[in-house]
Amino acid sequence: MKHSLLHITNGDSTTHRLQKLNVAGDIITWREMLCEGKTSVDIGSESFWKMRFDFLKDSYKVTKKKFIDYTLKEYRNLCNHKQEDEIVLWFEYDLFCQINMVAVISWLKRYRKGHKVSLVSSGKISGSDKMFGLGELTTEQLQQHYENRIELTDDDIEYADYIWQLYCSDSPLPLENAHKFNPKSPFVYLEKALRSHLLRFPSLENGLNHIENNILTAINDNEFTNQDQLVGYLLKHQENYGFGDSQYFNKLESLKKLFSPFDPIKLNKTGKKVLQNQTNYYAKIRSDFSYLGGAKKYSYLYVNSTNKLLKITS
Image (cartoon, rainbow, N blue to C red):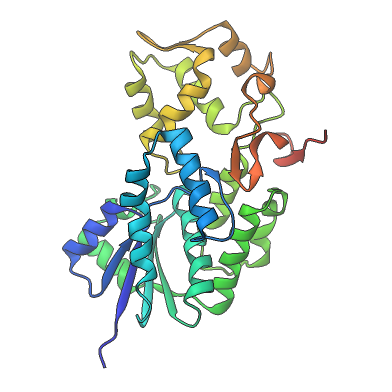
């Protein structure tokens, strides 16, 4: 009997690579960015998709038509695939991918229980210090990654589902130690991604998070004639967040009062004081509608001296 396969990829570029590779089986593209905005554990429910659309519409001006055509239709396509013998996940090392990955595995646990699930991850390559995305691999490397895919055990699936539940909870504090519960996990990039996630909460020192401080540092240390140049630089030096340009333009919008936006971009007096921790910008940037997973972004502070989060009590 023929072995049937379903591939779930991290984006269109990987899907196109697999099509050129002529891998057997159908391909579904997971088009979401669950590392941004509010999330809940019930992936696929009507309330879940309404919440996600509201966020994408408000933050990224995504139209209802685009949301349906780009995300929901592909999700419905996934729902229609029920009989495959094996489901292969293709996700990269960065935060963007790792959060989507645990979300997809949580969905599979609920709706495809008992199916064989395997994982193809990209990141470290022997002989190089650089981290590689799936799109940066040669055809031979991609094929080798596929052949070396890891079959996930029931414990692995339970663990990924557990991380997704923690990510969607109203407190990020348990994520600080969550990696300790499964030290032999095949999700070798998840711990670092979760640490990067925690750094997205505002710092105690100046009220900006790690990414926002990096943006101010980039402006202070370089000369950019426009925001396109700045975003290009941020994409190139973004550590393991895996963001796209629209996410960085969105972040620049929230920080625009700290710099002159054009020709060249420079920090203003307040921006310099914030960067030097001489003033705290928390009260100016705080929003009750900003979420990271299930937690309110501004209900917690990151303490750099201890690398721990502190809950703000009202």
